[in-house]
Structure formats: C-alpha cells, structure tokens
Length: 327
Ligand code: GLV
Ligand code: MG
Image 1 (tube, rainbow, N blue to C red):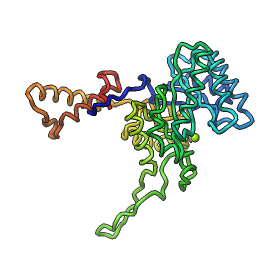
Image 2 (spheres, protein in one colour; image 1 turned 90 degrees about the vertical axis):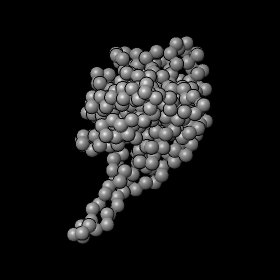
Image 3 (tube, rainbow, N blue to C red; image 1 turned 90 degrees about the horizontal axis):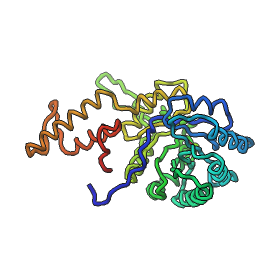
Image 4 (cartoon, rainbow, N blue to C red; image 1 turned 180 degrees about the vertical axis):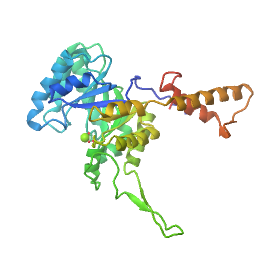
C-alpha cells in the first residue's frame, strides 16, 4: 500500500437509494415505509419549475413529521446555477431539524462547487445549532464534472459518495441516446463470420468508462461509488443486469427511481452466501499459508496470494465481518 492513508467516509448502508419527488407528499410517506437504505427527497429534476417552493415546504414537513426509522435521509438540492439552490440549503437545514443526514448536490462541475456549498452549509449548521454534521452526496453527470472528478471527490471532508447520473451525463456529452441508463443497441460490435458465415452482434456497455472512472475516484478518496438511475421501471431483468455490472465494477449501491427497484438493489448489492463462503475460505487458506511462511497457495485448483486476501476482506467488510482494507 502507499504511504498515503485514505480516510474513509463514515460507513452507511447504501445498497438502495430511493428517489422521491418532493412535490408529492404521498410518495414521501410511502418512501419512509420502504426498505431503502437511503431515501433522497428531490427538489431538483423531478419537480416542475413552478412547484419548487411547494416541494421545499413538503420536504421540510416530511423531515419533521415522518418517522424515517433508521434510514439515511438526503435532500437533493437544485443546481448551483438556479435561483433555488441557496434557499434549498438554508431553509431545509434551518427548518428540517436533526433528521436530515445528507445533502445531494447535482451537476457538480468543479471542486469549488462543493467548497461553496460547504461554506454555506457550515454557516447554516452553526446558526441552527445542529449537533449532527451533514454529509454530501455528489452527482457526477457532466463532461466537466467527469473531467474534474478527482478534485471534486477530495473537495470537502463532508463528501461521502459519488453518484453517476447517466441521463444528464448523456445530455452533457451529447451521447446518442434518450433513455435513462441501460444499454444501447447501436453500441455494439459485429463479430467476424464463423465457419458457417454467421456473425453475431455483441452489445457493449456504453457507460463502462464513466462508471469505472467514478468508482476509481470515489475509492481513491474513501467515498462510496453509487450507480444512478435506470429509467425503465417495468423491466426488472434489465435493471438486474444493469445493477450487476455496476456492482461487479465496485459500486456499493444504485438508485431506485421506483419502489419496485428497491428490493432488487438490496439483493444485488449484498454479497451472496456463496461469495461470502468463498471469501472466508480464502482468508482461512491465506492465514494458514502465512503461518507456514508461504505467500501464495492453491485453493480449488487456482492460485491465491496476498492480494486475494485483500479482495476477500473487502467482500467480508460489506457484511461487517472484517474491517475494510485500506484503498
Ligand atoms: C440523474 O440525476 C441523472 O441525470 O441521471
Ligand atoms: Mg441529473
């Protein structure tokens, strides 16, 4: 490991992150009854421009009146280029009470965006006499944000997680798609013909670079990488595979833009018993090898070494069986 130690964000379950429009009080109540680890009450893109003030009032009432149990509660503020963001921050923190855990900042483009919000939040927090420090969730969803992701991730000790916003990102880079997340049949390659002259179309994952870049930046700064929305909520199989590949790349959770996606997130971002069992066997085999002075051994006919033990420990840390190895 490097001589540089990476501080880890406060640990928090973040397998499922349910988005709820602040303009709909009934949905806010339903969200509290869901199994989502994190609920974000939205003041931004799911709220029509003429409903912004009403949504803010609903969200403040929901923070005060609804029993959120042991959920993490976040509020997505409006973008820093709008006339709404300063009021979102001031009013939600001043009037929302201690229940607010996180603020989600959309469309972060440069590190100074985070710094500016941090400055305002710090003042309001002090003035309101809050005891609990508010953490930040940052959505990376523009070419600018993706370019500056490293500086953004390190811009505030409040930072807890980076989120990939596929819809706005696609708009920002002018990608040839109008759907929210998911695959694109035109992002594919045609295989060479086999002996019978048959060719196959192999679909690729057009979001691979962006998600992997986000995972690397988040982990290098001790933050949680979270995959954003998958818009087609009537396609659970599509959701499942989309979430799977984010999880395989290192994401810790994914947004649910519909309550039906919450149990899928919770299932897919929890390691299976089979994976946990394999990780436990790797740790045990490596501990035995270390005791014999060996650095690498065979397990089930495959080589494992000291890096395998760190992979296994990272897996076991997800269920609290081991401390997380440093990034
Ligand atoms: C989320 O905010 C997105 O733009 O996908
Ligand atoms: Mg967005």
